[in-house]
Picture 1: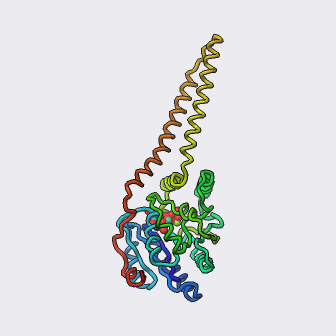
Picture 2: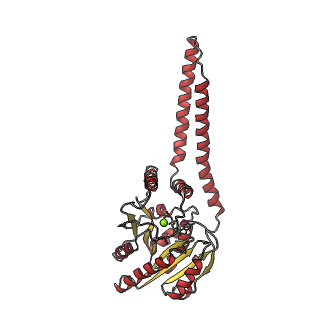
Picture 3: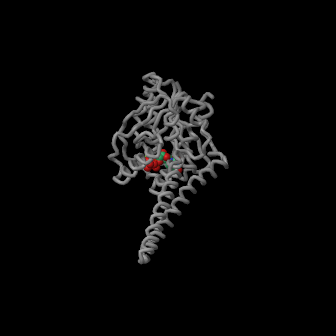
Length: 319
Ligand code: UDP
Ligand code: MG
């Protein structure tokens, strides 16, 4: 069986040497154990501005098992991963996706391959605990998983994009036409036999996170709006609720007027004005998120452009 390990990289010059040495060790060991026949590390350079591509070229010249794909510009983690998985779907029996920063334990790849050899199609890498994450990241992540489940999105708890996928799963995945990618949701919606492998998530080996708060929020919003239209339904409920409150207020106002008192009301007026104004804007914003998604989908733009590949991609990979 041929295994491709897909590693998206954006400005990862600080970690690449270590990542290459650890992953090539994993591949060598898997080969020794006869768990795989051949293995390749496929780096996808997501338009890095540092020496990432230079290093990828160098490592691919030094090691038989390293190959690289350079995207013409930065398209983001999910799209870069897609580029690698699309390649793998045509050239591998199974692919493992892993981040470049070694936060995910490379040793978890062994049990993943074991599961694959037992006939399992998808093996999720799941974090046992989040000791190394900040209090903030841990709790926002938990809130996000809860929210996704509440909204009907099937995603695996504490699973990021560290997983093994069989060839047929990869082919099913790349047949998804959507441009808004939320891979962990898409993969779990496939429904092929799956298993989980637990591991401890480590600190980033070197370099810094490419997911600052702003990107995290937009990733979460993308995830929700790609997988659930329930927020739209909730807006309708909220609108109905406001109308009920308004009817109640009208009846109450008329009754008091008939009883001879006019309700004094600067505060109540202003508060409800701001509140309802805010609610309307929020509703418009939520609808706008979906409209924006539709806009992006109908344009059907190509997901990425490949600028260059390492020579090893042509010679080592039988089509
Ligand atoms: N990444 C990418 N393109 C981007 C941002 C990130 O390919 O625009 C890669 C990055 O190199 C890493 C992975 O996505 O391999 C996850 O990023 P990071 O480790 O910064 O995220 P975190 O672990 O902090 O959530
Ligand atoms: Mg990371």
